[in-house]
Image 1 (cartoon, helix red, strand yellow):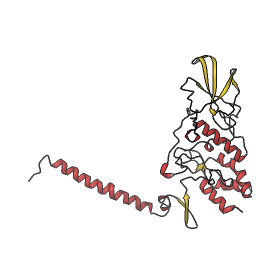
Image 2 (image 1 turned 90 degrees about the horizontal axis):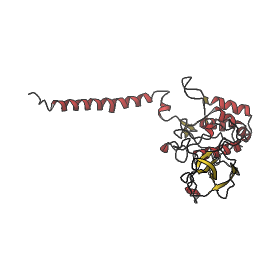
Image 3 (image 1 turned 60 degrees about the vertical axis):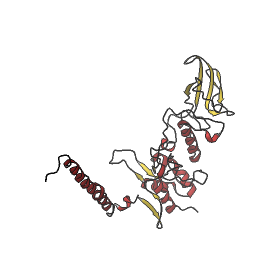
Image 4 (image 1 turned 45 degrees about the vertical axis):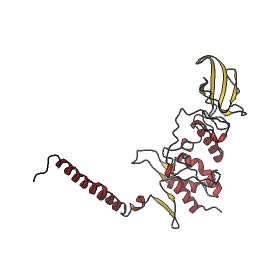
Length: 293
């Protein structure tokens, strides 16, 4: 008895569903699991875990923060790149800061806990802190000496044109002293928390300042990665930290530089990306080679 022409397509679809379920739902995943158990691949399949005396202390693929309980950098360790993943390097909250180059005005409120720094101020604060930690010039263009974005809200008589009538340093809340005393002859005021000077008609005007054109602190020391989990820093940022780490551990700087070189990876396939230094494995090597105390 021939099947009804209406039922035949449904049975063909059911057979295809069963075949592809077996192939893609069972055979393919089990094959990948088996491949991942092959010698040389099993470590990667397990997450590239790092073990010390049989205990897992991290992964070669996920960064860590080397700070104390209050978030201050531990000077005897190389410092990682900033992270925007949760409270820092949280693999369950991998994310970028979602702030772009136009994020230059802070949100200032009467309650500091509700204030939000712009991307520019975050960069300025991190650069200042990194400079102080490693004894270099932490100044950057468009940053104030106290580590916030050097941005003015400039009010003009005719909106976009005309003489300047008022100027506010939007990222420095009263009673702070503005980073410049006057702009085009008009005294600069500190910002009042809760006031939106841009909505009130102020023209956002970043000020370069007297910082060097090429900052001493590399960009990866002041900006978070796209995932927030990257364990690598640039060789330039690693070199910046060598003197401090060697001093804190009583080690020969040349030997510390050799460790940095040993934990530096080149470009992928020889031409993709940039060289990087894995901070997690580097700091573990430091503890082995130059233990504290």
